[in-house]
Length: 306
Image 1 (cartoon, rainbow, N blue to C red):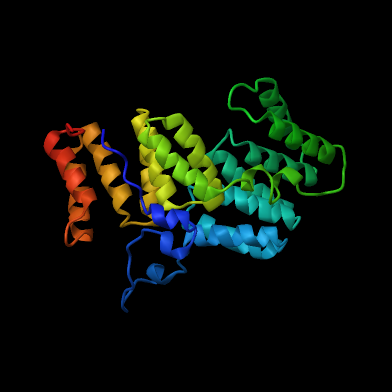
Image 2 (cartoon, rainbow, N blue to C red):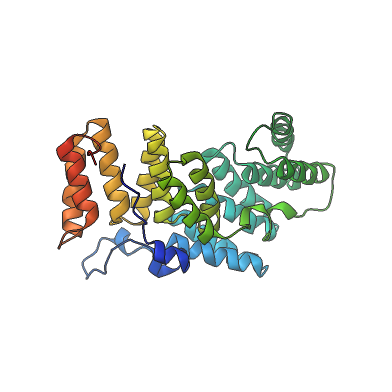
């Protein structure tokens, strides 16, 4: 298997969440648009970074506005909803936090910060359903195996127990800036993930991509590599979800388009793969490596021989 291309790796090193790092390839348009086309358009990675900065400055209302823009632009991304929950909790808008965390849990039922945030919001609302979430956290702690964050579970459980017992309403310290969900260097995690993918260490790559994703939010480069890693693990349905998320944010993202086309070849959907190749040929007016690689996949009926 060829080495994976680095999607805008230079951009990643200087900060994936900047406007220039998005590989959307889109352009402006003239008049005569339908009303829906003139609705506010948000760069979800930019808005995510803006929300994180606002949370770090304790400006929770500004953080909630920016995080809400993330969920508008990328409604299927758990990180945006979790971040909105953090912002609303910081503002002690517990109803808003509850709604945000419920969406996050629906998208990722085993996401510990989302579960803990939901439990805390429910507890601060004096909602008896907080006990259900607390029971889930305790059960998870008892069955905490490899890869499980026992420390985070302990902290979240203690915070929720205090709130259920009638403690003063407060956000969890474990969900604040400097905590686990904001820790680490996103750039380093992204570069590390690319290296691990090239070594075919897909589980470790996915763990690094999770750290990059939490740092940058719904960024098409990160989502594309998540799709790639899941595809190489044989989880085509899950891979497709990430490719579709990436293309929803950046419709002309060449890497996501190519890899989604390769997935279609693996499924035997050659007509679908050819449509994506035609799209790449349109995007790459003078040719590009992504179009040529997908063309090789289609001609070979699968991964081309090296």
